[in-house]
Image (cartoon, rainbow, N blue to C red; front, side):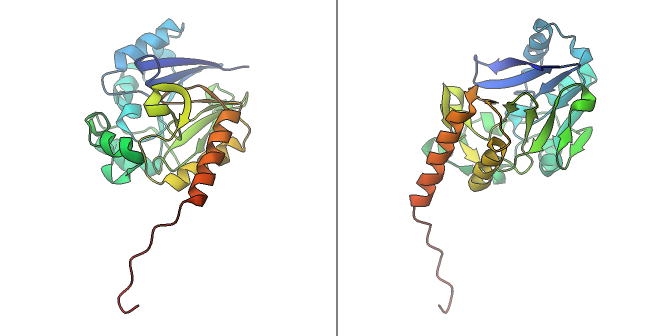
Length: 248
């Protein structure tokens, strides 16, 4: 059965996105910012789904614009929440880990000091703690959760058998969705090189379209060309000089 993908934007038309996957049973991917519970609930009902019928809620990573309303929606729907073990401390704390941010460019340095990425929400206690690949077939959707670390250690993506990839924040539409269809790095990654490696590994699995947390959707061919440019630029950039050791 083909899975219908319903984008539910919670900020603007595409600045912060969550996704409803409607297969044999419905699954919600990501829960937006802390104040977005009602908007997500409405988006689910507008798609013809009773929110209390949700089979599962998947959180792609431990940033508050993705798990902000997760505990609220879990309590209101009764759906179990799946999230990766490597971001568990962040979920239990109810706020993003500021040490897991390497700003990318001037925008990253500025944005990381603004209120949105530093918001606090209700702690999240995932019901399903992911440690590796996880099949969604028993939950009514033909696809799987894959571990795609780099943006955070516990970042995951959802790869549907039909070729759609719900990619979280491995990349964004330029400036967090302001340039909806232009591939771009997010303002920060925990590990920028690992994030690019994870994106390439995901593209190697053959998706045709990437659905993003900010901006998108984007054809995989466009993302591959952008990724190739990123790799080429990094190869040309000189490596930072290491500090001299004492006695050297």
